[in-house]
Image (cartoon, rainbow, N blue to C red):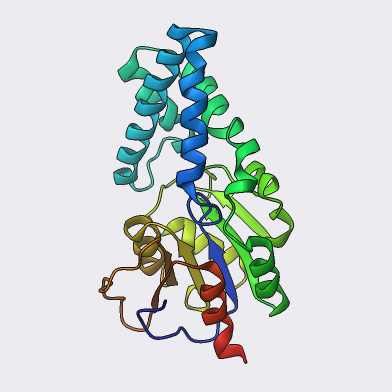
Length: 245
């Protein structure tokens, strides 16, 4: 369901990954089950992993307010929570790598958006350039979802040319640059109105919000930019392709 006018013809579509190309609640349930079973193989290790992951997520959200720091964001995301926890950054990094970046990979494909590959193929067939920009590493997840080859550009917020978490506009701008289009010729698709829609509009991109239940009223889009809202990827792709028919 669209609750705003359709966007003008586009040259590129850029996607968020987590919660956008796949649905997060089923993945979270699967990972929660793994954490529940982890004490069977070492209660202390399981408690430590849970504590470390919570601290990492919370501190990472706080780093959004830094903009583009002079320090490496890739290092800061581990050093800051590690200091609060009193653990070595490398130890925290190992836990995050295991529980957030590697173990979820085997669960991703069943959690993919319905018709994901088919809808991406429709966009590619319409000669739209496709990219992914996420706050988290993307390559392994895209391969686990079986859609890496659909995207000519894929990177995350810790890329040295970005070094800023969403909603800072730099990552969105870089996606347009790497795809060879102007920001107003691109649509960014994400599942968070605060960081995805807000960041896209700050960069001069159109935005689409994928959400389970579209609200009756959306935030107002800046002049000249569109804001679409859908619960279904196929319907969103229909809207993107409509001006090209």
